[in-house]
Length: 202
Image (spheres, rainbow, N blue to C red):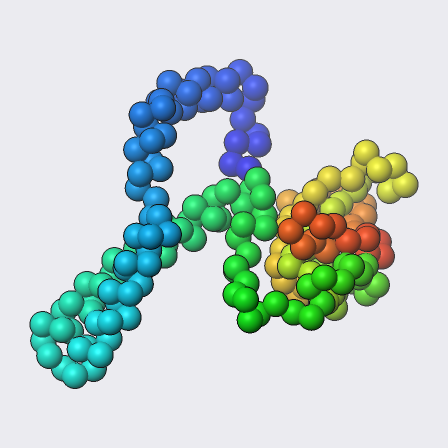
C-alpha cells in the first residue's frame, strides 16, 4: 500500500483531506464516468461494424473505424483500471472472466495443495518462487513468516499472483529468515497449504 510508512498523525490528516473532498456528489460523478455494460456493448458493436469499411479503404469509413477503436480502447482501459484498483480488496475481480465455453472440467473439483513450491534466484540474485500449476486454481496467495512458523498468527499475506512461475519475492526483510508457503484460490474457495520453503537471510 502506498501509505504504509506514513506516521499515524500524518495519515489522519491525509485521510481528512480525502474525506472532505470525497462527497456524495463527487462519488456519483465518478461512478457516472464508468462505462456501463450497455454503453460498452454499443462501443463494441460500433467498432465491429466499422471494420468492414476500414478494409475497403473508404477514407470516411477508415476514419470512422479509427474513432470507434479509440473510444473502445478508452472504455477498456477504464474498466481494467477499475478492476485493478479494487483488486486490493478482492483479487478475484482482476481475473479474466470465463465464457460459457471456457469452463474447465476441473472447475467443480476440490483445489489441491502444491507439493513442489521452491525458491530460485535470477542472474542478479533476486529470489523468486515457482511451482506446478494446480488444476482449477485461478490464483495463489503467497504468505510469509519471520517468527516461529508453527504459530499461525505470525503469518502474513505477501502477494497475490495469477501465475505459478517466477513470482518475485519483493517486500521481505532479507536480514531475517523468511518462511514461505502458498495456497491456491478459486473465487472464495481456498485450497490447502503448500509445502513450506525457507529463504535464508543475507
